[in-house]
Length: 370
Ligand SMILES: [Mg+2]
Image 1 (cartoon, rainbow, N blue to C red):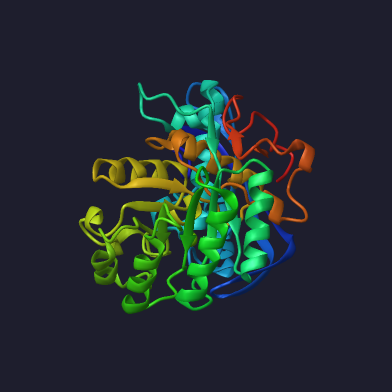
Image 2 (image 1 turned 90 degrees about the vertical axis):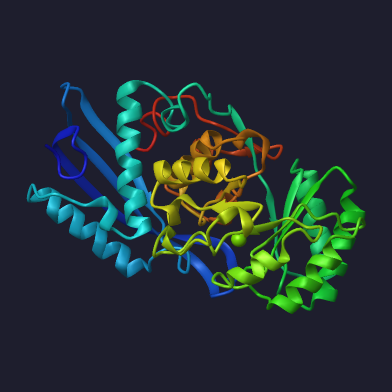
């Protein structure tokens, strides 16, 4: 009987903390990010059938989507102490990023034992995971000229889906930026916008009206209002631009606060596996959302390669995951990673990511990083 996975005996847990610098500071609604603290976790032991058990996981905490880094460290150290003492660890009682690390290590180990890619282990039986998934490029806030230049660069690199950050300027200025991007990239590129909860209902309504115009043709507007302003989300539906939720459904306190029924509040849900508590929880949530008429887009929290690779497997395993662009092109934001760039198992090429085909996350590629 193992500490947190009943199928594993003699379980050992190793944790390594690293801080990965970003290439350039990233401005967000909650301040500037210069480096990403990550916790790498190695799970070892013996399965009940006698096979050796090896799995790797990662926690990359990023408030407000997950618990703070200190809480994540405490939770993982507590889990390691419990494992060393042979005591039980209740994964459901851990905050989401710490839970992600341990549940990823566990499902990686099981998929490696079974000789199947993680995407196959996560997908529903009879529903084959996608072999590759499209990725969107993120276009940050900037002047009209800066926004168009960033959009043109991304399209030249092969991306056919752009996510433009909005909400830092007036609705009129953001409309001008999006209209200029549409004019520059043409009709075949999908344009999304993410306001990160910047607007009140009145400003969001003006944005939806402006972004619905054919010369913008926005695919969806993400988190137009604050995470808990559920009634405004509902009021913005059906006005010509689909509404996506991110902060509303990725909160460190779990899914209890989701508006219900979710299909009345959102057309699309952006799910971050790091905030959902792991790959299996994310795919389960995506299946539930699908049954309620809500599409899922999977995004990282600017993770290191371990969790980024897991997010690619998750995107391939969610319903319709191969047809929708996901927020997976974030590896280039890091100046250093847990593996060299040449060893990145999920590089973005022509706006797509091929899903690794080896057992588990990426075979034994990550065994040396912890
Ligand atoms: Mg977002």
